[in-house]
Image 1 (cartoon, rainbow, N blue to C red):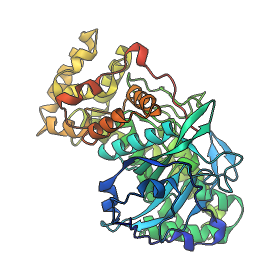
Image 2: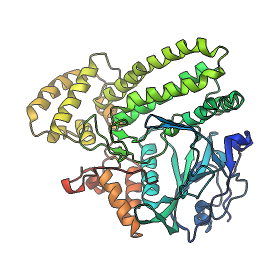
Image 3: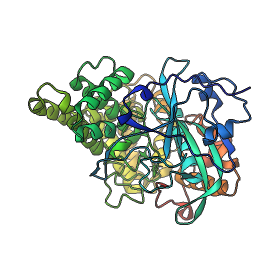
Image 4: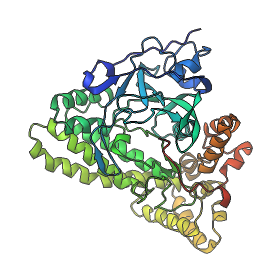
Length: 472
């Protein structure tokens, strides 16, 4: 049966200044690595056993109803404004309204050159494609708002980075690909008509109750504050929080040099291009405030009196750190079994984090160990932990079911960097067994099972991943 995608495209109906119409570039010999059947069903697709799946999701066959295009946006990259970025290696096939009534984009990533490629080849190599597939689906299972992975395809042709590498295409699904940078590009050009059109579109698609730019800013800020607090609670480091990688919908997007912490340290950085720690683990809370300030600036021209709006918009941005602290407090209190935290419970959390940092203990295993009774094993010098544990146990005696709260807040499994690297290495030799094993294990990351026990182990010294890479 031929694959049927129920496209209902709205972005393509916007003015053509918003995008460039461009088809994906066919590849030499597509072969399917993975297809997310459950997600496909949620999107309302039929014909999921189509033998042409590889050709469709490599870009060799454009499905009926698709309107391929590359979106325009700008962005601050490591604090420096780039006035025109856009989809340089991605093509939006179109949108579907799923069985849950939610509109979502379907995008091919690594599908060839576009007018926004900026001398790039428009391709992706296999490693970043599989990293994003595994990590985005694991994030979904962890309960984090995120883009999803629908398919991964080998292209049968090499891409050249430092050396020839196997090429691949990822099919990504998102509530939209609207970014802070999408607003920035029209604001910077002084194109208020286009900015108004974009605003109206974003409101209708994501925040129908946000009847003016101030309410829209409030809504996006709340989503981003909650998202970053959730990242921090599971030890996730995005790695490249540029404004073009900051989604208006509040989803995690663009899993380039992302990573999960092993040993806890707030200044942890993995990204090979983040030389000064701008996007370190702890800095993410400050950077999202900075990103929202750029969104606020881009929205100002839509206000009746932009100059008068500067002060109230600035006040909103200054409120955001407290929003993040509140979300962080709730998330981390749950990690130690507290449902309704009091103000002094934050000290209990930070004291444990300080002990974990001093001991270079594993972040995930320490918190999950509070449930399993193994947290003490993370510390060579146990005296400090024992003293903390006495205070903690006295506190959670006032909670109804702290174990249940902690089990929901503390995953057993995360996509550990060394496992991801092992998976990529094997896949470059066309051995996808570890990829499929990780996909199966991370589908239920809060449940401990005997057959995934080895995946809980932190890396050996020889396995530690020192840096992660964008792949562009």
